[in-house]
Length: 65
Image (tube, rainbow, N blue to C red):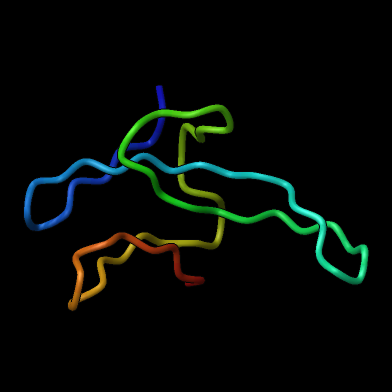
């Protein structure tokens, strides 16, 4: 089951992860939230991170502890 976060407005977001290649050729893992479950959905928040909600838009973001 994908990790789900409901913001203060009641909208559900699901946490995802993806490996991307940067312009310099270095590979990096990115984390993002989406309203639906897609390939790459995570079951839990990665170690060392916490979920916060932006005050302006209500979108969830991951922040390092």
